Image 1 (cartoon, rainbow, N blue to C red):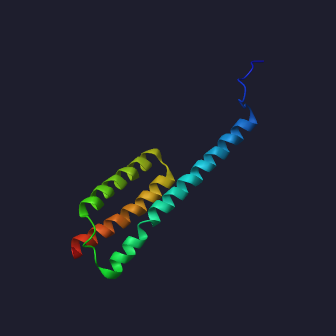
Image 2 (cartoon, rainbow, N blue to C red):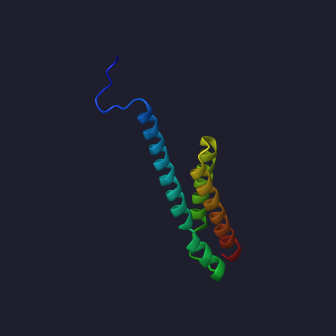
Image 3 (cartoon, rainbow, N blue to C red):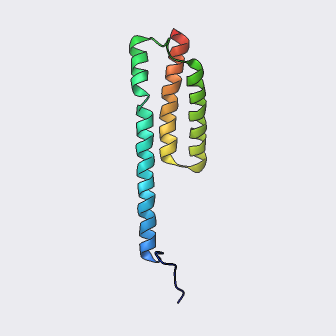
Length: 105
């Protein structure tokens, strides 16, 4: 029987550890997606209520929106649900804020 390097796990324990690490990674991805997405809610709510967007930079929101769109494409290519969901919702928020900026100046 071949000896494994010290600290290496094989057999059924290795599979369960991989599943646990995969679950932890998924939870971290979902948490990051939720936090970065809801970070835009206060800005969106304020813009909708006040219709005041003068201080917002359209260039910043446009560049950010393009970046979020590319993250969405990346998530779709990888078929990673946390990346897809977070960036799809964030993109909707960014487009809404940018549209209000264009409409209300």
